[in-house]
Length: 174
Ligand SMILES: Nc1ncnc2c1ncn2[C@@H]1O[C@H](COP(=O)(O)OP(=O)(O)O)[C@@H](O)[C@H]1O
Ligand SMILES: [Mg+2]
Image (cartoon, rainbow, N blue to C red; front, side, top):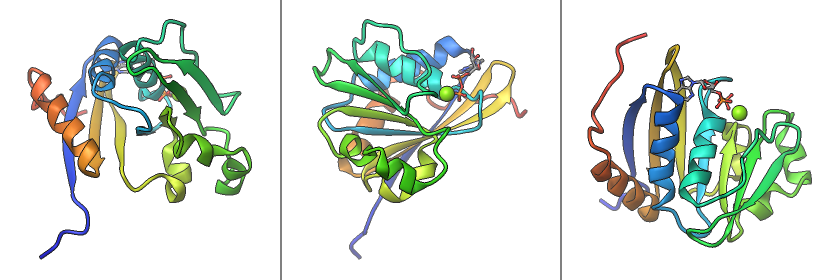
């Protein structure tokens, strides 16, 4: 049997906004040019917080604000020295709208993309990517479900799993 595609999954629980940023910063240190990180989850589950943590881990020195009113914000990263594209599709009504705004150039370029509301453009997201689903578990608790597709992202996720002290840590049921 030849597997068509495989995936590696990591389920985490964050107990504070700070912890979410730290997890994201750890992940960031494992990324390379062209990587695509998708964020899915309701309002307030911590997508922007996660993107900010990624920025910290990539050495972005300016504060990252929510890009809600601009589709894409661009930040110079240091490790690796590429652009970080923070994309927020909250106000996108259709895939066509995203395409008209040139979103594919970011997705398939050399920079690192972190995309809030990525499910809105699921059809054009590269097959190989890291997909992170955030969920609300309590006032300061968030579930983070990370799914890697493709050898590179699987390796990233395996490495992250090893680095985190207790990857199996779980939150109490909501
Ligand atoms: N464990 C946690 N992880 C992330 N954010 C948290 C957590 N606990 C509380 N929060 C709060 O939830 C909010 C998340 O907001 P934000 O990152 O803008 O979410 P989103 O972009 O998904 O709408 C922030 O006010 C943050 O302080
Ligand atoms: Mg947001």
